[in-house]
Image (cartoon, rainbow, N blue to C red; front, side, top):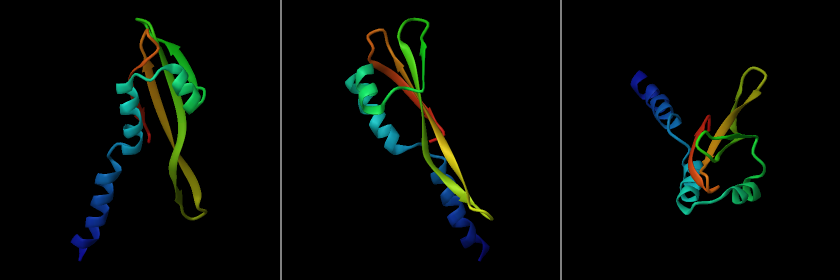
Length: 102
């Protein structure tokens, strides 16, 4: 009986520790197609922060709310804040990206 109770919990933990396939699917083609800064500004809006890179280019950071969870007893909602970092090269094209909290 106890074993069957832990199976759903174990499955939830395994699936919750994975990456965000929707974000990965949207950023990987953008990197491969060499999307530039104006494309991201048009489609994603202005970044939350910008910083210059040491060897040229810029790093843009976006913060987004990506779901959340409610907890008892007052059903307070705790949002998950997603941080997306885009790194552009000297040519203003996306060279790499990473994200956390999504």
